[in-house]
Image (cartoon, rainbow, N blue to C red; front, side, top):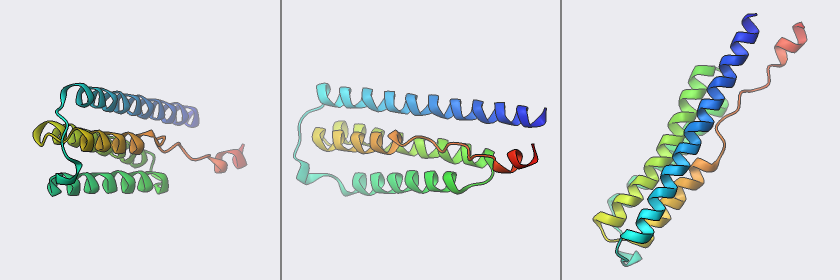
Length: 137
């Protein structure tokens, strides 16, 4: 009975992560559309270094959180880290939105949103197979 409850909770967590992923991708799609249709075009060569460093830090954080989620044996921590990875990817896209409107860098902003979407496209960490429960059955 306890294994069934744990399995259903794990399935619910994974379903929630999928919803978060869909929400993040939807937000990034809206950001891209807003930038494409409302932002002024700018020169790619003059991108503010702070935006670039921020995007790199957020992107690396997203990658590291996802890697830790995959490696984690703690189910709760795995879900929390996978969610954090998705939210950091979303932050990269939101940074692109800021870049497009605050610095008039439409093309660079779209690239940041694309980068965030690529980070978020990777599926959240799936629960590992529970081989030890099969051996006892």
